[in-house]
Image (cartoon, rainbow, N blue to C red):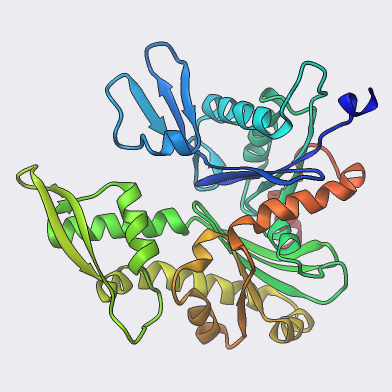
Length: 347
């Protein structure tokens, strides 16, 4: 009978683009886009995750498909709660007797206390028994297998959908960090804006993301790739197809990618000389889905002069890290971790 009541702890990577849930002892059990489709008339949730993502930009008037998170933080509280409810159910395979799980959730290192509280409340309302927060880059570093227990410094650049988190990690903590609202979504928006301005074709977010994945680059490469893209003619409203090249997309993505590289340098400048010398030995670790954008590692290497390694399975690093932190959940502090206040005290 004991196993029925055994507690199921969860590690949650609550991302702008995707939610990954790590169940203690099982690994990643949920990997779904953070999208919810709702019937506006009844308020009923129709789909969550991949099925809802397919509805983006395709729904009839009474149905709306939306991302309840924006820039790494919750923009629609009620929808986030309902999305997490569904995902917790899948993760715990809840039966009548299952106790509510304790949950570790990652938050961007730029969040305010108010934003931290909104994540905690959403998770509690969605069915968590207790909630613990962990800074995203710290979770990503843990998940990437870095040995951050010792005093040696490591630099993690976690490029997700809504935010890029850059942090120097040492002794199980964050020494210096920064969070940018420039990441995968900002790249997609730049591509969509460019295609409309340059080619007079309106494309959706899903198409823009496909362009980024297939022919996107942030560093010059020898071969040129091209891709045919279908969209709506901005003037006539008729379907129209255009051919885009990787060189064009490079011109579009150069600037936002450069901002990520500049911010990485800024974080290095704030770190102590000892930590910087550790980092130059250990290299920079790239995590997050958008770190796989062609040339991101080379761009950072060129700007910082430090070797860059893309972590294995960069999409899942934060979730694995949240999962690893479940091991010391009994020593973690519940509630907000006041990242903003700690940063002010450091400054």
